[in-house]
Amino acid sequence: MPSRPDFRNCVHQGIAGPSPDHILASIRAEYCLPPASLPPAPSPAARRKRSEPVPQLEDFAALARALGAEAFRQLTKDLLRQRDPRGTLARLPDFLSQHRYGRATPALVDLARLDRAVAQTERAPALQSIGACCLPPALLRAHPDLALAIHPAWHWLDLSYPVDRWRAALLAGAGTAPVPAARPVRLRVHPSRGAIAVRRLTARDHAFELALRRGDTLRQAATRADKVGGGQIGAEGSPPRDPVDYLHDLVMAGAITGVSLHPVADAAPDASASPTQEEEVTS
Image (tube, rainbow, N blue to C red; front, side):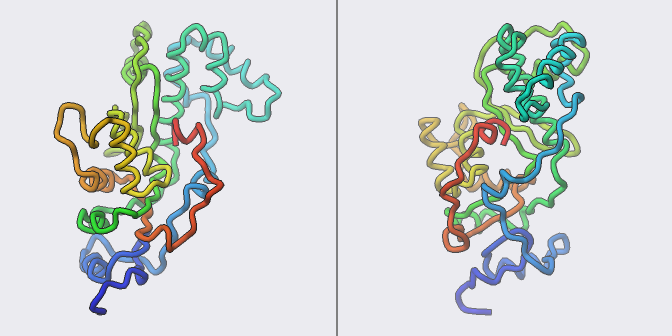
């Protein structure tokens, strides 16, 4: 073993650059054996090009219940009647924002966005996440300029209405559930223990996670989060959290599928790539 770590000899799943010490520790662990080859961590541009599952009418179950069967049928007919080739169910939330139903009840637009995000999570490709055994806090702390590939099942929403609980009530059969009043809410939609979790985030935490999703390094994401919240990341009313510990929690939750510890040296960034509005909303 060399006296200094050679960060170019990693053979472990989804990671470009850990030290030989860490590779050997992974090999010794029964639950963490290295595969024969290393798939490169996809760039933000490559992630945007990944094909999305084809939306179905049943993906908007909560919206259908909120509107009623007849109104939902009319909405989808109006959408599919458009000559715009993009006029498919994938852009139903955007179409609804200009439709008479959405103009009359703007919360319906956010409900449709949440419905779509949940459906995207349910139908996301079955990719293996990187476990905590491969990305311990010590390794994360040693590489503040690492870049991550986020699992395609994870999505983020920045909404004007707290529709998460409204959606849960509608799907539970409460057809008369009241429409929520306008209040900003930031949500993360992701798999959790065999189900789909919809979690509310603070402005700081949402900014931190979304920055990682867009391809920012750990250092850049922490700086962006600090500026958004006027302080460090962490739940409101609780002590600030170390960005490394926060990221480690995301690793343990299965959010990470690829890591580049040397993103500048490994691949030049795609200067032409910029986050689209769709990515901002649902990744």
